[in-house]
Length: 332
Image 1 (cartoon, rainbow, N blue to C red):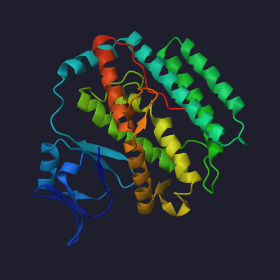
Image 2: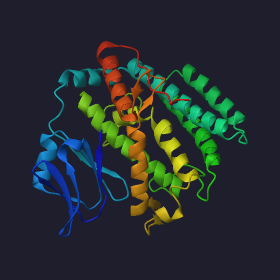
Image 3: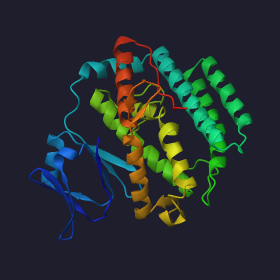
């Protein structure tokens, strides 16, 4: 899958025959054959002509709009999926506490296991690090999750595991830019800026995937229903946050692909990627999402985008036919 990122502020996307043309002022910045574009992500003040919008809709090209700081604004999609029976079953399942609990229990187990594997891989690659105590605590939390009796209990255990994990995660950064604790809305340091931006991109992909499968993205099983929250998409990305974004952030900062010059502070508060930083991040993000590898989860060559679709389809079978749901866990 090829994603076209439109990041140049003030530029315009047009359609010309079977090509998408990006213009800025009177000049053409880039031309891409339509056949090579599977997805478009628009950041900030980028204009789309009516012809371009009609082309994206008629070709089923999912288009996501983010603010220049990477906050999700909306999506351009064709008609709703025809899979109304799946949505009806999803609403019925979401009203069943025992079903929600079982799906949530498996998601929490997967998320804590994936966090553990991020820590284990780092320690394996850096023998000087000693995270044995933190890993034992995460393992104890994992066992607590198996014994939790309610959905709220599971959410509390997940929050406790996240606190342990992020405290450990902060000790894995070796360059000049460090991470102390998770902060959002706004992110208060460069690492948080990257994590927030990455999670937003992942959520936008998940919304498109669960919608394409036929789900209502607002109705989840682990995340509670809340006005405007895409709970099911958030359920799906819990399986992938650590495996994709957390590992990628470590690579970007520890290899100094991102440096202090890639960020800027704003008067209203918060630290954000600047234009140069966003381009570097998006290049790495797209490489990570499109990279082929043999997953121990499936035993087949795949990509993270393919795995996310597989998981949404797996969840659809769970909802419709009561098959046990097996979430994705980060590779060792």
